[in-house]
Length: 445
DNA sequence: TCTGGGGTCCTAGGACCC
DNA sequence: TCTGGGGTCCTAGGACCC
Image (tube, rainbow, N blue to C red; front, side, top):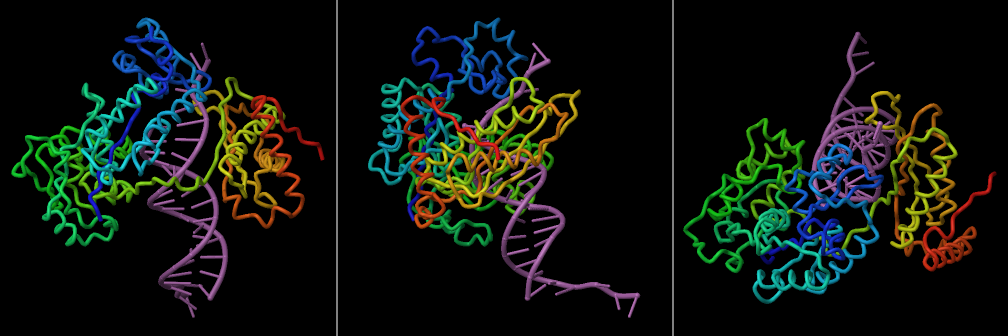
């Protein structure tokens, strides 16, 4: 197996950058984007970061402060962000054979199968994206996805916007170490790292300035220094909860982490944490998914601006979320077996009595037919609804999804054909006149 | 007064079976 | 009076990501 070289392309302050594209006058001003109901901050420009805006922070708490600093505030416009994301991802996809679109604003690329210098390829790509879309990006390069993520943190801080990790050293010694590692958790892809990684090593780096991890793996002194300067909470996959647990056993930096025994890691932060550690050591352990796996659930939910008490209003909301979810289901050419509805009161309220519940309803046969989905969701909601509570949020989740194509036979059973053509017609109308042009009403039984 | 939405994966514990 | 053990499957809850 070949040495993996992975880059992470990350759009800078994506939502805020989208808002700035057509408003050059915002240059240099703090920009924040708010979540649904203008509830909390979901994105901010670097100027907004400097004045102390934080992701997830409730807007009302920081509103005055933002105003004082002349901040441009936007309600989120997901249709716009999705559209711009698509353009960015198209450019990235055209640049390499193996691309994993990881989120709306990030993608991993495999560089090892491309001819030419990885850094140069990335520089090209960065210029291309910025020129064609107006969205600034940072690119981190490493030998694993987790390393690429780590490199991207540095990339964001430097003017060039591209940073290649000064290598986990890829030497015969490392390959020998891995062969003798008897860890039962050692991933399949861990062997053979004999290919050199010279290309993205810094020019002044020489093989003598190396450091041997407790595991026996060899890394460069430079990489060691970076690990020592990085708190564990900055590592992809390790958030505040796990960092707290790690701090208790005196693991504070990424270097502490990679020098900890596998068994201790697994015990403290579970198998996913262990994979993260291997990746930091330079052993690919998180799969590169250039073919996106089938989705397992589709969810649609919304918090109410003001709480809701009555069942009819909840039923109406559920119908609307079913419509959104079913549209996505059909877009993905999937059908679902089960519809799950959940409701909850406002857990931030200290006055309201608290209640939350969920119920799942099996469909008589797997389908993407909206009226059947709504009817199942209504049945589920009625099972869990209790009068007298102030409801804050309702969610619909479609689960047990399967591919529509595997179900051709049943197409001709129990009126499925009719349902199919009805849904196609509905889609055409929505496509032409907008999502709200046509709605689903259910007959009372 | 006002605190998002949409995903994934892992683990522990219970039910059930032989 | 003594009261198995191991496997599988499911669910709830907790953790992470952006």
